[in-house]
Image (cartoon, rainbow, N blue to C red; front, side, top):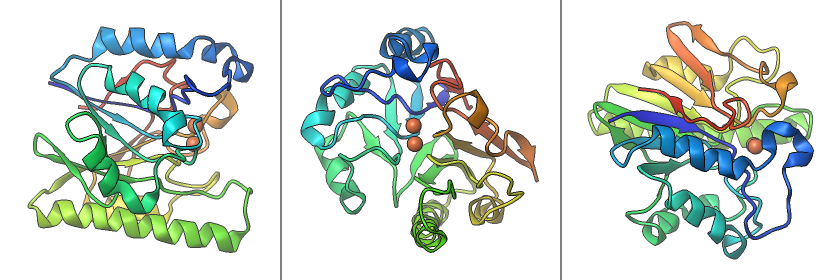
Length: 231
Ligand SMILES: [Fe+2]
Ligand SMILES: [Fe+2]
């Protein structure tokens, strides 16, 4: 029984969004996902998929992509990415009801893996795409969601945590952020994130051990679409 993570599948079985224009690594990437997943992941394993699942703009356009994910072996826990238009942040419970027994959606809740609580939220970092005021507003909301996730796990008696974000934990050049401070406050063992695409973005934030926490980037193209072993 193992825990894996990988993110940013950017699937488009129902919409026309060829990904190979983003580089050779994306050529037939859904075939790579399928092949690598089947090589590593068994029905007894758990995989956290860290967001940007689909290019579809609504549930109808995303369903074929979610079906592709559902057909992969193992327990699948999904995090919300910035491109996941099918996932209304206020209706995570409804998604969990709709896909019960097939997919689990991580937001304002947590999932148990052995004696660890898997906690997480989309997160946010400043990429220069919005005003600083807007950035701070979104970041505050995401921090509140992360706190709800941690606290629910803590209240349920968990003392070991693995924290998942879609966005990197810090903006470029930062040494810490409210997300890394929250990871330290609750004593998370690892912080796993994705969203960073292309070689010149892979070092946007932390990798390795910082203040006792292991940081890992698991965006699909960084991993060449091989699920990363977490535990
Ligand atoms: Fe992405
Ligand atoms: Fe993203």
